[in-house]
Image 1 (tube, rainbow, N blue to C red):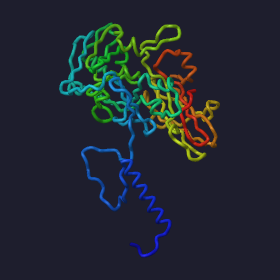
Image 2: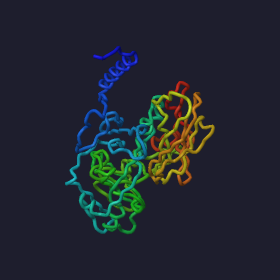
Image 3: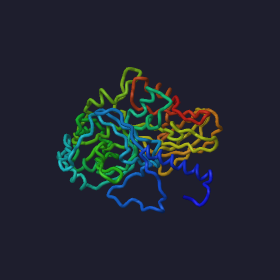
Image 4: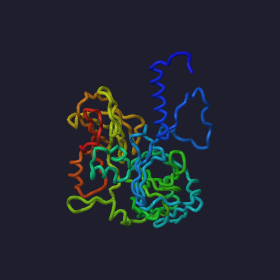
Length: 403
Protein backbone atom coordinates (compact mmCIF):
# COMPACT_ATOMS: atom_id res chain seq x y z
CA UNK A 1 0.00 0.00 0.00
CA UNK A 2 1.09 3.60 -0.57
CA UNK A 3 -0.03 6.91 0.85
CA UNK A 4 -0.83 8.45 -2.53
CA UNK A 5 -1.33 7.83 -6.22
CA UNK A 6 1.50 6.00 -8.04
CA UNK A 7 3.10 8.13 -10.73
CA UNK A 8 3.23 6.88 -14.32
CA UNK A 9 7.03 6.98 -14.22
CA UNK A 10 7.15 4.82 -11.09
CA UNK A 11 4.65 2.38 -12.56
CA UNK A 12 6.66 2.05 -15.78
CA UNK A 13 9.91 1.68 -13.84
CA UNK A 14 8.39 -1.06 -11.72
CA UNK A 15 7.09 -2.89 -14.77
CA UNK A 16 10.45 -2.58 -16.52
CA UNK A 17 12.20 -3.87 -13.42
CA UNK A 18 9.89 -6.88 -13.24
CA UNK A 19 10.39 -7.66 -16.92
CA UNK A 20 14.16 -7.23 -16.53
CA UNK A 21 14.20 -9.60 -13.57
CA UNK A 22 12.26 -12.20 -15.57
CA UNK A 23 14.70 -11.87 -18.47
CA UNK A 24 17.67 -12.37 -16.14
CA UNK A 25 16.05 -15.43 -14.61
CA UNK A 26 15.37 -16.94 -18.04
CA UNK A 27 19.03 -16.36 -18.96
CA UNK A 28 20.16 -18.10 -15.78
CA UNK A 29 21.62 -14.88 -14.37
CA UNK A 30 21.07 -13.69 -10.80
CA UNK A 31 18.56 -10.93 -10.21
CA UNK A 32 20.61 -8.07 -8.77
CA UNK A 33 19.73 -6.71 -5.35
CA UNK A 34 20.95 -3.63 -3.59
CA UNK A 35 24.38 -4.87 -2.37
CA UNK A 36 24.24 -2.43 0.55
CA UNK A 37 21.09 -4.12 1.91
CA UNK A 38 22.03 -7.81 1.88
CA UNK A 39 25.17 -9.70 2.93
CA UNK A 40 27.43 -10.89 0.14
CA UNK A 41 28.54 -14.45 -0.53
CA UNK A 42 30.92 -16.03 2.00
CA UNK A 43 34.56 -16.90 1.39
CA UNK A 44 35.21 -19.99 -0.70
CA UNK A 45 38.11 -22.37 -1.41
CA UNK A 46 38.05 -21.63 -5.15
CA UNK A 47 37.32 -18.31 -6.83
CA UNK A 48 34.72 -18.02 -9.59
CA UNK A 49 33.95 -15.50 -12.30
CA UNK A 50 31.02 -13.20 -11.82
CA UNK A 51 27.88 -14.94 -13.09
CA UNK A 52 27.44 -11.94 -15.37
CA UNK A 53 30.71 -12.80 -17.18
CA UNK A 54 30.48 -15.90 -19.35
CA UNK A 55 33.41 -16.15 -21.78
CA UNK A 56 33.62 -19.56 -23.40
CA UNK A 57 35.88 -21.42 -25.75
CA UNK A 58 34.22 -22.76 -28.91
CA UNK A 59 34.89 -26.52 -29.15
CA UNK A 60 35.08 -28.18 -32.56
CA UNK A 61 35.51 -31.92 -33.04
CA UNK A 62 36.11 -34.62 -30.45
CA UNK A 63 39.22 -36.86 -30.49
CA UNK A 64 40.97 -34.72 -33.09
CA UNK A 65 39.58 -31.54 -31.66
CA UNK A 66 40.15 -27.86 -31.15
CA UNK A 67 38.63 -25.21 -28.93
CA UNK A 68 39.03 -21.55 -29.73
CA UNK A 69 39.91 -18.73 -27.36
CA UNK A 70 37.37 -15.85 -27.14
CA UNK A 71 39.83 -13.15 -28.19
CA UNK A 72 37.10 -10.50 -28.33
CA UNK A 73 36.23 -11.02 -24.63
CA UNK A 74 39.74 -10.67 -23.19
CA UNK A 75 41.62 -7.75 -21.64
CA UNK A 76 45.38 -7.24 -21.61
CA UNK A 77 47.57 -9.98 -23.06
CA UNK A 78 47.33 -12.94 -20.65
CA UNK A 79 44.75 -15.60 -21.49
CA UNK A 80 43.07 -17.23 -18.46
CA UNK A 81 44.20 -20.86 -18.33
CA UNK A 82 40.67 -22.19 -18.73
CA UNK A 83 40.20 -20.13 -21.91
CA UNK A 84 43.55 -21.03 -23.51
CA UNK A 85 42.92 -22.67 -26.88
CA UNK A 86 43.11 -26.45 -27.26
CA UNK A 87 44.43 -28.65 -30.04
CA UNK A 88 44.89 -32.37 -29.63
CA UNK A 89 44.96 -35.32 -32.01
CA UNK A 90 43.59 -38.12 -29.82
CA UNK A 91 41.88 -36.56 -26.83
CA UNK A 92 43.34 -35.42 -23.50
CA UNK A 93 45.19 -38.15 -21.60
CA UNK A 94 44.89 -38.57 -17.83
CA UNK A 95 48.44 -38.84 -16.48
CA UNK A 96 49.19 -39.46 -12.80
CA UNK A 97 51.92 -36.98 -11.79
CA UNK A 98 53.27 -39.51 -9.27
CA UNK A 99 53.99 -41.95 -12.11
CA UNK A 100 55.16 -39.39 -14.68
CA UNK A 101 58.61 -39.89 -16.25
CA UNK A 102 60.65 -38.01 -18.87
CA UNK A 103 63.44 -39.98 -20.56
CA UNK A 104 66.35 -38.11 -22.21
CA UNK A 105 68.60 -40.42 -24.22
CA UNK A 106 70.36 -40.83 -27.56
CA UNK A 107 73.56 -38.90 -28.17
CA UNK A 108 74.14 -38.13 -24.50
CA UNK A 109 76.76 -39.17 -21.93
CA UNK A 110 74.27 -40.04 -19.21
CA UNK A 111 70.82 -41.22 -20.37
CA UNK A 112 68.48 -40.17 -17.58
CA UNK A 113 64.88 -40.73 -16.50
CA UNK A 114 63.45 -37.69 -14.69
CA UNK A 115 60.29 -37.73 -12.60
CA UNK A 116 58.27 -34.58 -11.98
CA UNK A 117 59.87 -33.96 -8.58
CA UNK A 118 63.34 -34.17 -10.15
CA UNK A 119 62.38 -31.64 -12.84
CA UNK A 120 61.15 -29.23 -10.18
CA UNK A 121 64.43 -29.47 -8.27
CA UNK A 122 66.25 -27.70 -11.10
CA UNK A 123 66.31 -23.86 -11.15
CA UNK A 124 62.99 -22.70 -12.59
CA UNK A 125 62.23 -19.90 -15.01
CA UNK A 126 58.98 -18.15 -15.94
CA UNK A 127 58.23 -16.30 -19.14
CA UNK A 128 55.25 -14.88 -20.99
CA UNK A 129 54.83 -16.09 -24.54
CA UNK A 130 52.10 -16.90 -27.02
CA UNK A 131 51.21 -20.25 -28.53
CA UNK A 132 49.52 -20.49 -31.91
CA UNK A 133 48.33 -23.46 -33.92
CA UNK A 134 49.96 -23.40 -37.36
CA UNK A 135 46.48 -23.85 -38.86
CA UNK A 136 45.11 -20.75 -37.14
CA UNK A 137 43.10 -18.63 -39.58
CA UNK A 138 42.73 -21.31 -42.24
CA UNK A 139 38.95 -21.80 -41.79
CA UNK A 140 38.36 -18.14 -42.68
CA UNK A 141 40.34 -18.63 -45.88
CA UNK A 142 38.36 -21.76 -46.77
CA UNK A 143 34.92 -20.58 -45.71
CA UNK A 144 34.67 -16.80 -45.63
CA UNK A 145 31.39 -15.71 -44.06
CA UNK A 146 30.29 -12.36 -42.64
CA UNK A 147 29.24 -13.89 -39.29
CA UNK A 148 32.75 -14.86 -38.13
CA UNK A 149 33.94 -13.47 -34.80
CA UNK A 150 37.61 -12.89 -33.92
CA UNK A 151 37.32 -16.12 -31.94
CA UNK A 152 36.28 -18.11 -35.04
CA UNK A 153 38.82 -16.39 -37.28
CA UNK A 154 41.94 -16.50 -35.08
CA UNK A 155 41.00 -18.19 -31.80
CA UNK A 156 43.81 -20.76 -31.96
CA UNK A 157 46.27 -18.47 -30.21
CA UNK A 158 46.71 -17.59 -26.54
CA UNK A 159 49.31 -16.11 -24.21
CA UNK A 160 50.25 -17.52 -20.81
CA UNK A 161 53.00 -17.22 -18.25
CA UNK A 162 54.82 -20.55 -18.40
CA UNK A 163 57.03 -21.92 -15.61
CA UNK A 164 59.49 -24.78 -15.83
CA UNK A 165 63.11 -25.76 -16.37
CA UNK A 166 65.19 -24.67 -19.35
CA UNK A 167 65.96 -27.49 -21.72
CA UNK A 168 69.57 -26.32 -21.85
CA UNK A 169 69.81 -27.03 -18.11
CA UNK A 170 68.61 -30.61 -18.59
CA UNK A 171 70.90 -31.13 -21.58
CA UNK A 172 73.92 -30.00 -19.58
CA UNK A 173 72.92 -32.48 -16.89
CA UNK A 174 72.83 -35.43 -19.30
CA UNK A 175 75.86 -34.30 -21.33
CA UNK A 176 75.05 -33.87 -25.03
CA UNK A 177 77.68 -35.49 -27.25
CA UNK A 178 79.55 -33.63 -30.04
CA UNK A 179 77.87 -33.90 -33.42
CA UNK A 180 74.32 -33.76 -32.06
CA UNK A 181 72.10 -31.42 -34.10
CA UNK A 182 68.46 -32.40 -33.46
CA UNK A 183 66.24 -33.88 -30.80
CA UNK A 184 62.95 -35.76 -30.95
CA UNK A 185 60.16 -34.69 -28.59
CA UNK A 186 57.54 -37.40 -28.07
CA UNK A 187 54.22 -37.10 -26.25
CA UNK A 188 52.35 -39.56 -24.06
CA UNK A 189 48.95 -39.10 -25.69
CA UNK A 190 47.23 -41.77 -27.79
CA UNK A 191 48.46 -40.06 -30.99
CA UNK A 192 52.07 -40.25 -29.70
CA UNK A 193 52.74 -36.83 -31.19
CA UNK A 194 56.44 -36.53 -32.11
CA UNK A 195 58.41 -33.67 -33.64
CA UNK A 196 62.05 -33.09 -34.57
CA UNK A 197 63.48 -29.89 -33.10
CA UNK A 198 66.87 -28.29 -33.92
CA UNK A 199 69.25 -28.46 -30.97
CA UNK A 200 69.88 -24.71 -31.22
CA UNK A 201 66.39 -24.07 -29.87
CA UNK A 202 67.37 -25.82 -26.64
CA UNK A 203 70.29 -23.39 -26.29
CA UNK A 204 67.93 -20.47 -26.87
CA UNK A 205 64.64 -20.46 -24.94
CA UNK A 206 63.08 -23.95 -25.06
CA UNK A 207 61.88 -25.34 -21.74
CA UNK A 208 59.99 -28.17 -20.10
CA UNK A 209 56.99 -26.38 -18.60
CA UNK A 210 54.97 -27.68 -15.67
CA UNK A 211 53.28 -24.41 -14.63
CA UNK A 212 50.86 -22.06 -16.36
CA UNK A 213 49.65 -18.70 -15.03
CA UNK A 214 50.76 -19.51 -11.49
CA UNK A 215 49.32 -23.04 -11.24
CA UNK A 216 49.97 -26.51 -12.61
CA UNK A 217 49.34 -27.00 -16.32
CA UNK A 218 45.76 -27.74 -17.22
CA UNK A 219 45.29 -31.31 -18.58
CA UNK A 220 44.49 -30.04 -22.09
CA UNK A 221 47.69 -27.97 -22.00
CA UNK A 222 49.96 -30.93 -21.33
CA UNK A 223 49.71 -31.79 -17.62
CA UNK A 224 51.95 -32.68 -15.93
CA UNK A 225 54.71 -31.42 -18.30
CA UNK A 226 55.12 -30.23 -21.86
CA UNK A 227 57.76 -28.92 -24.23
CA UNK A 228 57.62 -25.17 -24.82
CA UNK A 229 59.43 -23.72 -27.84
CA UNK A 230 58.43 -20.02 -27.76
CA UNK A 231 57.44 -18.44 -31.05
CA UNK A 232 57.23 -21.74 -32.93
CA UNK A 233 54.14 -23.42 -34.35
CA UNK A 234 51.92 -25.00 -31.73
CA UNK A 235 52.37 -28.66 -32.68
CA UNK A 236 56.14 -28.41 -32.07
CA UNK A 237 55.33 -27.57 -28.42
CA UNK A 238 54.75 -31.27 -27.67
CA UNK A 239 52.35 -31.81 -24.77
CA UNK A 240 52.44 -34.61 -22.19
CA UNK A 241 56.10 -35.04 -23.10
CA UNK A 242 57.58 -38.41 -22.14
CA UNK A 243 60.73 -38.85 -24.24
CA UNK A 244 63.51 -36.76 -25.76
CA UNK A 245 66.00 -38.46 -28.05
CA UNK A 246 69.06 -36.50 -29.20
CA UNK A 247 70.52 -37.27 -32.63
CA UNK A 248 72.57 -35.86 -35.51
CA UNK A 249 69.64 -35.50 -37.94
CA UNK A 250 65.87 -34.93 -37.97
CA UNK A 251 63.63 -37.95 -37.44
CA UNK A 252 61.17 -37.20 -40.28
CA UNK A 253 58.13 -38.21 -38.25
CA UNK A 254 54.58 -38.56 -39.50
CA UNK A 255 53.72 -35.12 -38.15
CA UNK A 256 56.47 -33.37 -40.14
CA UNK A 257 56.07 -35.20 -43.46
CA UNK A 258 52.42 -36.04 -44.07
CA UNK A 259 51.38 -33.00 -42.01
CA UNK A 260 52.77 -29.63 -40.94
CA UNK A 261 54.66 -29.10 -44.17
CA UNK A 262 53.83 -26.51 -46.83
CA UNK A 263 53.48 -27.54 -50.50
CA UNK A 264 54.99 -24.83 -52.72
CA UNK A 265 54.08 -23.79 -56.29
CA UNK A 266 57.32 -25.32 -57.70
CA UNK A 267 56.23 -28.80 -56.51
CA UNK A 268 58.61 -28.78 -53.56
CA UNK A 269 57.59 -28.49 -49.92
CA UNK A 270 58.65 -26.19 -47.12
CA UNK A 271 59.60 -28.44 -44.18
CA UNK A 272 60.27 -27.44 -40.58
CA UNK A 273 58.51 -24.08 -40.95
CA UNK A 274 58.74 -23.53 -37.22
CA UNK A 275 58.53 -19.76 -36.63
CA UNK A 276 55.11 -18.11 -36.61
CA UNK A 277 55.21 -14.98 -38.74
CA UNK A 278 54.06 -11.54 -37.62
CA UNK A 279 50.30 -11.24 -37.47
CA UNK A 280 47.52 -9.05 -36.09
CA UNK A 281 43.76 -9.13 -35.69
CA UNK A 282 41.28 -6.42 -34.72
CA UNK A 283 39.10 -7.63 -31.84
CA UNK A 284 36.93 -4.49 -31.59
CA UNK A 285 34.88 -3.49 -33.45
CA UNK A 286 34.22 -6.89 -34.95
CA UNK A 287 31.25 -9.18 -35.50
CA UNK A 288 28.72 -9.30 -33.80
CA UNK A 289 29.24 -5.72 -32.55
CA UNK A 290 26.92 -2.94 -33.70
CA UNK A 291 28.15 0.63 -33.34
CA UNK A 292 25.16 2.67 -32.10
CA UNK A 293 26.48 6.09 -33.08
CA UNK A 294 29.01 7.69 -35.38
CA UNK A 295 31.86 9.58 -33.76
CA UNK A 296 34.87 8.49 -31.70
CA UNK A 297 35.58 4.78 -31.32
CA UNK A 298 38.73 3.01 -30.19
CA UNK A 299 39.86 0.21 -32.47
CA UNK A 300 41.54 -2.52 -30.43
CA UNK A 301 43.34 -5.74 -31.26
CA UNK A 302 46.25 -8.12 -30.76
CA UNK A 303 49.52 -8.53 -32.64
CA UNK A 304 52.32 -11.05 -32.25
CA UNK A 305 55.41 -12.49 -33.92
CA UNK A 306 57.34 -15.70 -33.35
CA UNK A 307 60.57 -13.93 -34.28
CA UNK A 308 60.62 -11.35 -31.51
CA UNK A 309 58.88 -8.13 -30.56
CA UNK A 310 56.13 -6.39 -32.48
CA UNK A 311 57.62 -3.04 -33.49
CA UNK A 312 54.61 -1.46 -35.20
CA UNK A 313 50.96 -2.00 -35.98
CA UNK A 314 49.35 0.13 -38.68
CA UNK A 315 45.59 0.51 -38.96
CA UNK A 316 43.56 1.47 -42.01
CA UNK A 317 39.99 2.72 -41.70
CA UNK A 318 39.41 3.08 -45.45
CA UNK A 319 40.09 -0.42 -46.85
CA UNK A 320 43.85 0.07 -47.12
CA UNK A 321 44.03 3.38 -49.00
CA UNK A 322 45.67 5.07 -46.01
CA UNK A 323 47.47 3.66 -42.96
CA UNK A 324 48.30 5.20 -39.58
CA UNK A 325 50.33 3.85 -36.64
CA UNK A 326 48.42 2.41 -33.69
CA UNK A 327 49.51 2.76 -30.07
CA UNK A 328 51.18 -0.34 -28.64
CA UNK A 329 50.02 -0.99 -25.09
CA UNK A 330 52.78 -1.92 -22.66
CA UNK A 331 54.27 -4.37 -22.01
CA UNK A 332 55.63 -5.16 -25.46
CA UNK A 333 57.44 -8.47 -25.00
CA UNK A 334 59.19 -10.79 -27.46
CA UNK A 335 57.18 -13.74 -28.81
CA UNK A 336 54.15 -12.53 -26.89
CA UNK A 337 50.76 -11.04 -27.67
CA UNK A 338 50.87 -7.25 -27.84
CA UNK A 339 47.68 -5.21 -27.54
CA UNK A 340 47.26 -2.23 -29.87
CA UNK A 341 44.80 0.68 -29.90
CA UNK A 342 43.81 3.29 -32.45
CA UNK A 343 41.37 6.19 -31.97
CA UNK A 344 39.03 6.47 -34.95
CA UNK A 345 36.27 8.88 -35.92
CA UNK A 346 33.51 7.03 -37.75
CA UNK A 347 31.56 9.28 -40.11
CA UNK A 348 28.61 6.88 -40.32
CA UNK A 349 29.44 5.53 -43.78
CA UNK A 350 30.41 2.10 -45.08
CA UNK A 351 34.09 1.31 -44.58
CA UNK A 352 36.57 -1.49 -44.00
CA UNK A 353 39.01 -1.76 -41.08
CA UNK A 354 42.39 -3.44 -41.46
CA UNK A 355 45.45 -3.97 -39.25
CA UNK A 356 49.02 -4.77 -40.31
CA UNK A 357 51.81 -5.83 -37.95
CA UNK A 358 55.58 -5.50 -38.38
CA UNK A 359 58.18 -7.13 -36.12
CA UNK A 360 61.72 -6.27 -35.11
CA UNK A 361 63.21 -8.25 -38.02
CA UNK A 362 61.50 -5.88 -40.48
CA UNK A 363 58.94 -8.48 -41.59
CA UNK A 364 55.53 -6.96 -42.45
CA UNK A 365 52.24 -8.86 -42.34
CA UNK A 366 51.27 -9.57 -45.97
CA UNK A 367 48.03 -9.27 -47.89
CA UNK A 368 46.31 -12.48 -48.96
CA UNK A 369 47.57 -12.02 -52.54
CA UNK A 370 51.15 -11.55 -51.32
CA UNK A 371 50.86 -14.68 -49.17
CA UNK A 372 49.53 -16.72 -52.12
CA UNK A 373 52.37 -15.53 -54.34
CA UNK A 374 54.94 -16.64 -51.74
CA UNK A 375 53.31 -19.89 -50.59
CA UNK A 376 50.89 -20.89 -53.33
CA UNK A 377 47.40 -22.27 -52.70
CA UNK A 378 48.27 -25.78 -51.52
CA UNK A 379 49.11 -25.12 -47.90
CA UNK A 380 46.76 -25.12 -44.92
CA UNK A 381 49.29 -23.65 -42.47
CA UNK A 382 50.74 -20.26 -41.49
CA UNK A 383 47.90 -18.09 -42.73
CA UNK A 384 49.04 -14.76 -41.29
CA UNK A 385 47.58 -12.47 -43.95
CA UNK A 386 45.79 -9.20 -43.14
CA UNK A 387 42.24 -9.56 -41.76
CA UNK A 388 39.37 -7.20 -42.54
CA UNK A 389 36.19 -6.05 -40.80
CA UNK A 390 33.45 -4.24 -42.71
CA UNK A 391 31.47 -1.52 -40.92
CA UNK A 392 28.08 -0.90 -42.52
CA UNK A 393 26.05 2.29 -42.45
CA UNK A 394 23.66 0.83 -39.89
CA UNK A 395 26.58 0.24 -37.51
CA UNK A 396 26.77 -3.53 -37.90
CA UNK A 397 30.26 -4.99 -38.19
CA UNK A 398 30.95 -8.18 -40.16
CA UNK A 399 33.98 -10.16 -41.21
CA UNK A 400 35.19 -9.01 -44.61
CA UNK A 401 37.41 -10.28 -47.37
CA UNK A 402 41.01 -10.31 -46.23
CA UNK A 403 43.37 -7.70 -47.58
